[in-house]
Length: 435
Image (cartoon, rainbow, N blue to C red; front, side, top):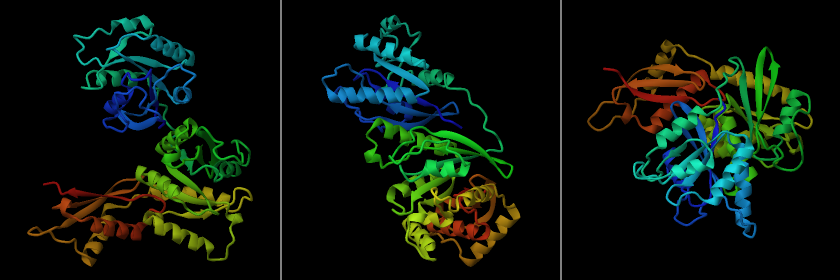
């Protein structure tokens, strides 16, 4: 599913960051009484009435070309507007209509994108006078209070109504997000797979700005490759393009069944690669590590195994992830990637019968009993697979809350030993037996 993006825009000090925090239910943006506190964009994942969305906070718009930071903020806000599916223009009901509000309205009208006018700081709707904002000719004004939360539900109702319609994905299609740091050869890899130059490739890092969907057929399956801009370390995401590259990569992971994490084999796996891998794994996507530029590595017959082992020592979950050593430039092992995608998808869809899961649980418990809590006997009674994609096994017992984490890991490894689930996270749910 392609998750829509909502961007908050407006002049400084109208309460965009406070509203951002209210709508996503956290305090992830810096809030201050001083105008212009928000310098970079912030984004967070939210959900309302069953519809997920990304919410983006932006800096305050001014028109003073003599102040470089204001020019930079304006550039970044325009990028936010370009990326968004829906815009929320936030105005300050306490200070009233401001000439800059009208200028922002004119800018938004020029985008052709849907937008809503939100009057913030309406702490008491019965006492507030926000009707002058109707003079902006933007239709209904939605009064809210970021401070006490009044009107935020109505605002989200109105926003969800304006989201793009959901288009059902092809049921048979396998969505593959090609993710990784900039300039590791993601676009070159997809081009080699497709056999034609469909994506822009350049030596300059960060050429790919948008996520591009490219379908192909392989052995009767439709594979849809989502080529994404590279993720950089969060501390370096300080320019608009890189910020939105980061957001788009997360959106691509949200849509993907399997992620191909492309790394530079010459550099080896870096901390940022591990963070991206963890992002996909935690989301529940399948994962394949593609060590690209393998043709440039000095190697012997043990090099690949050593590379994988060193990577797995940095992140233990990579023990369950296949590594493929390729060269997009020469085509080395690139077609093997298509076969590996289908194998990981088969593991992802694998369903084990309840009798087999119970038998395996019995073997594991017989080999090692769960640690007993003081004064309470901990028993594991039965287990069943409750989900595929990613595979999920529920284990039922009399005191699931007393089963220690290291024992859950023991069960996890025992189930994997039996059935693999290669390339996919395996989730273990500890559940109380129904009375």
